[in-house]
Length: 396
Image (cartoon, rainbow, N blue to C red):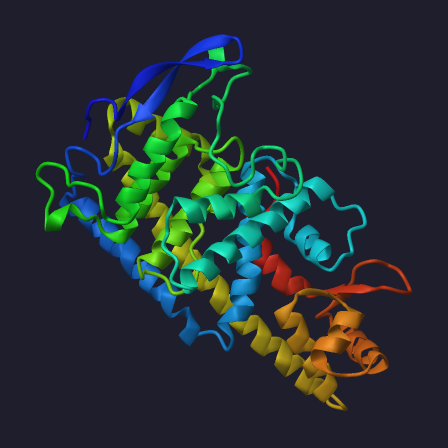
């Protein structure tokens, strides 16, 4: 549906230039979203896919193992969209304090993303509401270290920013003036918490299904661009937070970064079409297709990992001999697919020599590989595990 523009323009000063900044109207969309038969069917398919993803706990022997690695995979992908060049292996090495050759600034940004998500989830678990204060707390952790640490971590911006272009005057898009950010974010918070007024013609009290709420809230957040830096990453985190807070997912297992990375040009085009033409429906269709694909992909990844773990346990058992300790080491590598021998020994509760001997058995069987080429402080990787997680997760 084509509407009018979803906001108004206002003059704003950026540097030594006066620009036309865009101030979005509050959500929900007016008139209400057009949920045709085809779009309703797409919403139902995406919701069903999320249900399968949410039931992943029934499939995995320990969902936390999958969540640990999957969250880090998302952190890498989301940060790559913003121009970092870290890999999942870089991040895991960084968390081991083993960083030879790792681009430090990049991997710090990825590590910050994990910290921001974990903080947000912990706060929601304590009963804290999904609100602007929580978004600022998450932003503070997102920008705590690295290149963004001077960009007012945890504070809404007090100066004009812009998106695209070499300067404000030729920018692709100019978000609201700094004096309007608080009001815009206050209206977004009211929408997230179902305190916003309903548009004409809205059914069911005007409240959108959680998936549609996440779709339109993401666009609104990116349009406001309330922080000096980190808006893209926090806007993608907001989707996962909304789905969890809305009771759709018990764990933050849906991440659209790979989908958005693969369709980046169309993603930006659709955001612009919402702003200029009010074409929320085209964006919603794109978003729901991404949710369905991504949820299906996450379930398939979990199944592949379960199959991998079962096959490798059988390989160890078939080798015979004293394989109890080898199985303990394999279990440790399921928890941390990249780890040092010291970490293996501590986690498995075995001596260092036993850990070394058992790890060599995994290397000989082709399950593990030594990464450093050193005699001391060696690091081992569970290649097949990381290869499954790394699909699509390479820098642009």
